[in-house]
Length: 204
Image (cartoon, rainbow, N blue to C red; front, side):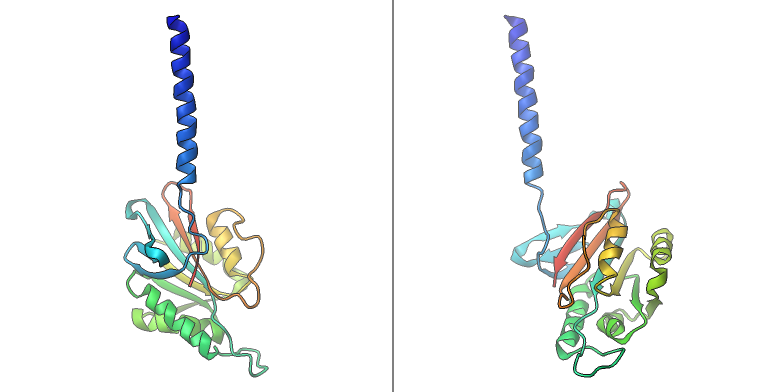
């Protein structure tokens, strides 16, 4: 009888543990598609009073990734500027990032990308770090091993930002490139000492 009771107790404990694990997984917040309002130090403020708090002790590097803002399609030029809406989006990036640390701002050498982070560079009193798409993998590895830059902002294109995010996260989080008219993605990849990066696919 005592043996039966011990076995029953173990089964109860096992079942309770399984349900507790399932409950903890269910309770893990999913921030995908949430609107980012601003970042203050290591706290990412989202709409609906939600917050993502980055634990400084566990962080190796943080990457902020955006596609360039809306381009001016009025004239058929090979390197267009931003539209009025695009300029507003560029200003919004600066507002989001003004309360947090940025060590380097990387941009391809074209006007729509550079203008997207121009306001951010102004408020941080920083120069843009140019890069070419053909050398992206080497650049990412260089940044990851650098001891100079720990908070990195990168602007790119609809076909490069998803790829950069996947490379940093170590998995194919994005299965395809962004649509041509999709400009509002704000991706944050947190490289951690544990070796398991966090990726937040937000909107702005």
